[in-house]
Image 1: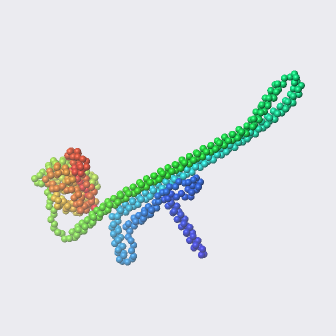
Image 2: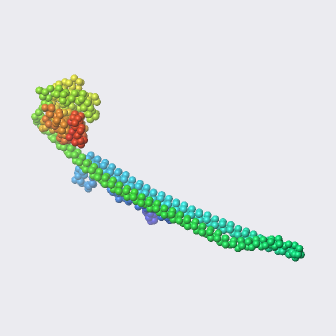
Image 3: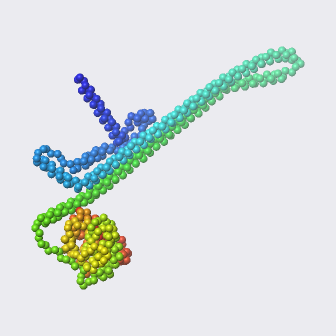
Length: 565
């Protein structure tokens, strides 16, 4: 009974050790460190040295990424506190503030996550690069091993062939030597027997016929047989010398062949060493170039990151400033609503059209015919598309109202000129005679989702211009569009052409001033667009340098577009 807990602990330890080994193997396979391993050691023992390449250790980057992910996960969380009424109240306030700030830090959290994702992608690319390097090293080692094994096999095969051929030649020489020896011995024996037999036959006959028979032919035949016998003895005597010379030549040829094989193996080994050295140099250079490119990319990413952070910080500051200004305005408006009504003096009515000036004929001559102005109003169709109720301040002959009718948007115009209003009504457009300040003040807040003021603000006195922009912002719904078109004071050509032709113009309004007034009215500017290039009216402007022309002789008019927050 007492051994069971120990057995259970041992089993748990073994299971934990197996899990740790599995995790270690997965981490090593995912983040290789250039180790050769058992298989590489075996290959080195069998095939010679193995090519190893040191790779970059990525574990510090992995730890930094994990820490960054932990910090990202902690954004918006609240530190725990001990129990108690005061601590619960503090926790409630902290959680409320955290929820309020979630809208502001949402983009930052998204940016942080995208940055961590980019770092993870870089880590994957580096891991893939390390795996490729190790794979190339392994493949090179295998190829070198295969070539070395092939060369050794060929050398062994040539050696075996040489040994077999030498044995075959030795056996053939021994056989021929034995045959020659036997033939010489047989020939010598046969010759001696023939001589003895011939002598035995001829001598008695010679003795009997010595006096009357010529024995000269027989003697000559005996001399020939003796010479042949001497020649055969000489061949047998020199055969040993010939065999020794043949064996010496065979040994010399074998030595030369082995020396040539050794030289070939040395040249091959030298070539393999050169290839390996070149491969190491190439890999080292590529790795150095990769590290350099990585450093440059890291510096560029850091520079862009800091630039983006600065830009985001500026945008956040601007949004926070706008939201705080809106909160102050809403608090002020709520206080004014709760306060008792006080009779206030409305802004003075601005009489754009003078009684002594036929403004319709004046606009026809100096601003352009109605068809030309209607073409210019095509610019506003995509801006106000999708709106439900649009107000045109200073509608004139109704060019903008016609453009809105073409895209199915309900638009209403106001103007101080009776003739202009009657012209609009004659064309089936909705328009009325009204002062812009009195009309806007009488409308409920959020009445319109689009307001256009074209060629109006330059007629107003500077001290009442902020009030007009404030009223426009108040009467817009959240997300509504406010567009103001006016002569562009940044284009010097307007002062030499048509701005001072209109006696009702007070002063040009810079786009920076309108942008500030719109922001104060609770709107955010989405764009400033130049209109009517000066080069179309004054051809001589086209000869100016491009940078100078774009800076001082751009559009004669401009439109600034803002959206209600």
